[in-house]
Length: 246
Figure 1 (cartoon, helix red, strand yellow):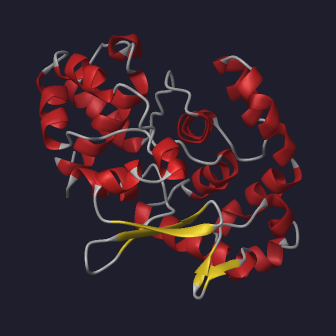
Figure 2 (spheres, rainbow, N blue to C red):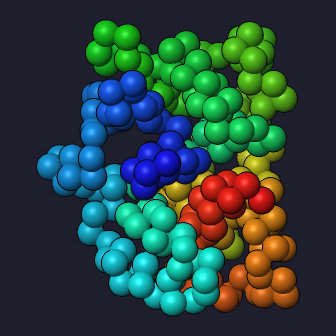
């Protein structure tokens, strides 16, 4: 897997689809974006921001690589890995869908919601539904889409979607606590939403993969070990945990 594939389809976003010709497509910002290389993100103002092109990742990667052998290997294997700046609402529902799930299945459910409740922006391409568009749904309809136990969590997130507007003004702990007032959002999902939806780079989501790599390679280490690049370290470790199949 190359670095761009890891960035776009490796678990931080479920908006992108890789086509047979190697290009990637996503419906974002009311249009269909098609990219084939990193340089494509630098030629469009929206994609520039989405790709977090203003951040000095080169310095961060050098500092991360100097921490230990595993992170050095991760930086060498995924030399352009970064954290995308995604829409908070899309991230909220995406990571509700992620609970007890795998990337392929999350992407499937993401696409089902888009086709069922989003709007067509190009023939055959649908936006991810807004809270207003999703307000037309019901538990029974979500069950027909086979979202499983997550149906009631999605319904509560729809009802409470306005609280997302308060997150930018809060410190990390306050923001996490507010997100956890949505039914079904625990600490891990809240940290994912804060990282991928609000670009809170102090976040360090701990899922099954990260727990495995922490146990195997960092026994006894506090998460402060990964500061000041906690979020990017986490993403490198997540990618490596799947690559080395811990």
